[in-house]
Image 1 (tube, rainbow, N blue to C red):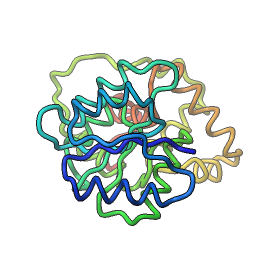
Image 2: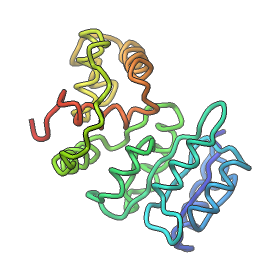
Image 3: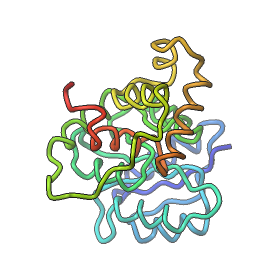
Length: 221
């Protein structure tokens, strides 16, 4: 049973998401919040597996709420799946950097949303990788050169880990990476987990952003 917290400031959207999840087998809605402040409080109280997080909300927005929820999480932090109206929303990039596991467009169908929740709960993180790649590429181009924070040293990675990271950043799924490199899907996951551990990253999404910011992958390349 995947325990889900639904966060959206629009009542009808929130109610629709809650109704969809309640009607689907294998999901349990443990709470719903109309703003980021309430989301932070409920996340601590209910300890959900997955949080469906709206971005644009009054007061505490989805990015700040994501940062606060993950910062205060103990044991297994919740997987945060960002919901947005636009596929090129600068706020989504900020959410990925804050540690969100991925994002989904609000106009996605019910089956896709349920699959996305299941995917992030299982640690597969980035859903709809082609859209995610466009997003990261677009905003990687816009990063201010004044941000001089050095990226982690990619030299700690093995050549295979570097290959897997590069293909992940290109938007390939674990299965597609396995087919490309002639290895098993389980081996891909192992390489990704080791990469995130070595680079002190909290999610696959952060690994993708790092690949662009470090120059391992170039936008449009």
